[in-house]
Each structure stands twice: as C-alpha cells, then as structure tokens.
Length: 205
Image (cartoon, rainbow, N blue to C red; front, top):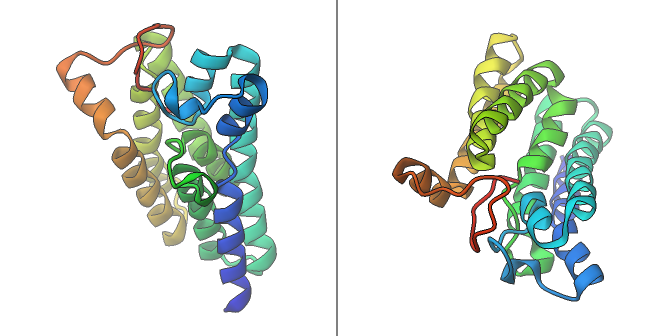
C-alpha cells in the first residue's frame, strides 16, 4: 500500500511543476498569472508569450499526465486504480500547484496526457470533438468542456473497467469546477474567443 501512495504523491508534485509560470519567468521575468487571463496554462501562454512558448507549455503539460500514469503503472503493479489516481493527482497538482501558492491552470492538457495513456481511443475521439468545437466556435473553454464531458461517456461505451470510468467522471467534475466563470460567460454570450486580445479572456488549457 505504501508504494502506490508514493506514486500518487510523486504525481501530484510532478503536476505542480507549472511550465507556464516557469516559461514566463524565464522569458519575460513576469508572473503569467498577473497577465492576460491570469491562468497558468497554454492558452494564456499563447496570449502573453506567443506561439512557440505556448506549444512548448502545451506539450510539457501533456507529458506530465503521461509520466504520472506511467509512474502509477510502475509503482502500482499494473493496478488500474493506482494509474488512474496518479493521473488525477497530476491534474490536481497542475490546477493547485504546491510550488506556486496553489494557483495554477485548468488541467486540460495534463488530462489529455493522462487519458491518452489510460484510454487512448476514447481520449482521441473526445479530443477530435473538442478540436472541432474550437474550430467552429473559437471557444477554447467550450472545447475543453466538451472534451471532459465526453470522456466518461465514451470510456463507459468502450467497456473500460470502473476505475477508468470513475476517473473520467472525476476529470469532468474538475473541469467544470475550473471552468465555472467560463460557463457563466458562455451562457451570457460574453465569453471571448481564441485570438481575441481582450484582457482577462478566459481559456481552457
């Protein structure tokens, strides 16, 4: 029992490494949480630092999710629930990073990484639906919510075991919690779109 706990804690600490914050400090000597939308994620990195840093942050955040699940498989002797909890721990770490006063991002890129390893085909289909949503509406937040909401449905439809389904439900709940303000703005029709330059524009990554 001790080894899985080590894996979960290690995954949380890994998730707490906020590449958006580190990239902004390295490139511009700023706290990215005080610029743009104030979120420590890839979309705000795009807004504040540009395409190259944003792509790097996006890929590194995905890598955190991948690495966390692999840690879970390694230390959990293949037990599904350990891998799922490690993936969730990385997402929680990204959202509430211990190294940065518990103010992080929204966890979508890290979720993509974790679910790509845990449940590849459902994650791929949900990801394509999210991309299509963003392409049509230009709302990154809406695409992120579509991705998270589809995961438990698709994972259940593909016949995955209970740990994966409940893990996906937890991911959906976390996504909704982190996108509360975005949801309100979407309902009111005041959510800004990808490529907008208004300060405080919400985003999904």
